[in-house]
Each structure stands twice: as structure tokens, then as C-alpha cells.
Image: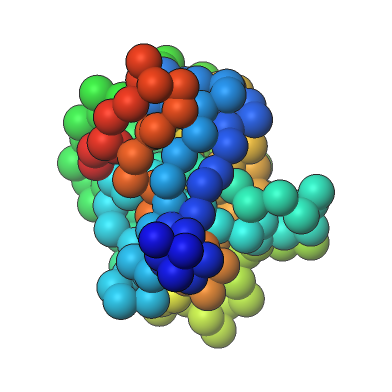
Length: 180
């Protein structure tokens, strides 16, 4: 058990409302730290990762929405992946912003995220101007309008992923596995 707790499983405390309703402030999760060493993050994963830009230094937790090569857009409150609306039963409220990947950038309400303030790879790292570059992911909080996520600070490099959250284990009345 000590080996598992030290090298494989860690706990993660939820400090904010960014993942409501899936995760509540004060929930404590178990996170598999080996998962992303064995396979890449998958669409729908609730993932823990090191901040992609300078911040408090604490790890973040969000849902993986877009994978390398995906086209992502948000229009009129609906998230689209590769042109199809994403079914999101976990979403707390529809986003009140529009978003598009185009011209080698992320555009929110028609304005590009600034590469100095957000993790937007240089043009040479993109395979096409309107799809997530190889080695990067697009993540959103389930509480879309109260979450600092890819619509604010850009893509998460694969190297920043720490683990896959798989179980809420505290408080006991919320004990259950996390689903995609």
C-alpha cells in the first residue's frame, strides 16, 4: 500500500468551483499517476496537470475536451469537436463565449489569445492552422463560465499531465468513480 501511495496513486483536493457539478469544493480525489506514462490522455478524462503557464504552482484539474489533431469550436453555448456537437451531461452551464481555432491560434469572442500570456505554440509546431497541434490538448472546466482553462491560457502540453483522476473518495457520501 505504501508503494502505491508513494509512486502510483496520489490524492488531490478540489479548491474551486471550476469543475462543478462533477467535483465540489472540498472533494478529495484519487489520481492515477502512472496512467499517462502508459497512454496519452483521452477525450473526457478528468485530468490533473501542472499549469501550462506561470501561476501559483499548484496543479490544475480539468476535463480533456480536445486531442492533438482535433478541430475545436464553441458557438452559441455548444462545444464542437471535429464539426460535431459534443454531448456533455457533466456540463454545469453552457459557455457564454465563442471560441475557434484558426490562423494558428485560439480566438475567444473573435480575439486571439496572446502567445505571451497563453500557451500558444509557434506556427512551426502546428500541422494545420485550425487543429490542435501534435503533443497538445484542449481542456475545459465543467463549470465553463467559472473556470480558467484552455479558453484563457491555451493548450496543455502532454508533458505537463500528472495523472488521471478516477475516484472521489472524500467526503464519504460522495464516494464514487469518475466517468468520462
